[in-house]
Length: 144
Image (cartoon, rainbow, N blue to C red):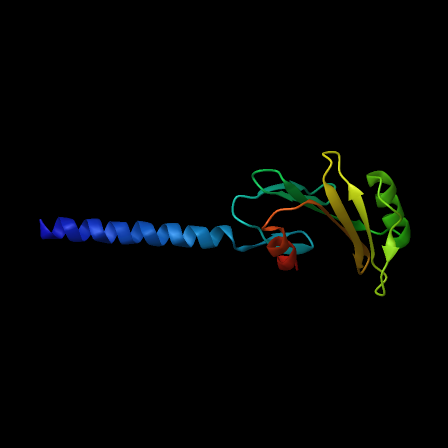
């Protein structure tokens, strides 16, 4: 009888440890092409490798973060930022001291958003943040 109780306790401890480690695994850094991120638990990830797009969305779909990348192919970052702004109906992109661009927009669901356009060597990177969520800052801070 004592052995059965010890086995139940050991099984309980093992299952508890597995659930704890499973939670850590959900928050592990994941690689997505040219960047990596720590995706909050419960967030959905949509990947379109052909077009170089990764979108992160919480389960309640209250917000979203899309990252788009590709080869600049001789196009200026200013032109890319202007085209993205035009497509999203945003204001004219503002250039910062590093030569990166940003602008505000409203998405098709009426959520306010921000676009940030930068380059990494020959590649452009577009970050589109729309809506807000308590875990959005953590996701943005985790981008590498």
